[in-house]
Image (cartoon, rainbow over all chains, first blue to last red; front, side, top):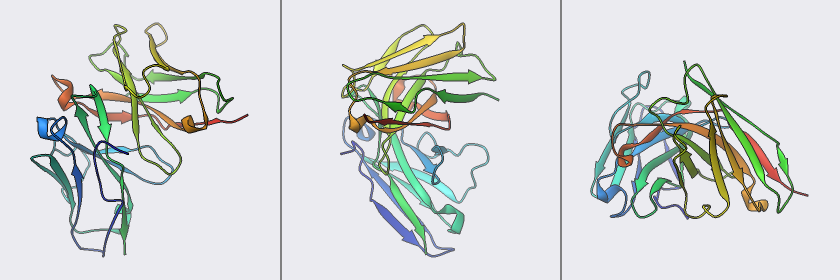
Length: 111
Length: 123
């Protein structure tokens, strides 16, 4: 059972907008710790997608955006493309555990 | 550009010790970054194992702390993971990663990952 909670799956049609939620607690997201997002294609290592709640690394298109409020965060993907089909993970720091924690991951299916 | 490469046995016997090394190339392990090990059981999510600084300072996941040792070899520009008393539940792809972010750990993320190596625990 992951410290951060994500929906197991989300789906959307090409061109649509989807969001993936990440719910934490007062010892991680609610404590002001940043939330980061990773995308993992099958058989490959996770790749940083969003850092510091809403910042994109170089090369990540602006179709991807992040937000954070209270004890939760969200990843939004607009203009959905077939290549966006992947697993997405949120990550933060937990002060009670004194370490990094991940969400359980969300599988995005492009219909 | 900095690259990470995991190496080590792909098969470990139950009750044995899993040993992996992460070689850092294109950069120095003695930079201002911390370095982490993260694992992913087949078909499951990611789990942070622990992290190390080039000084040798470490932090471990409390759930694994009694079995984990992470060390650094600055002369070889690499860091290593040892996980003792392994069971089938330790079967996973093990990744090494670079911690990034300024200031407090509350802001840290993993900006660089190795390709990962599958370790199977089986007799």
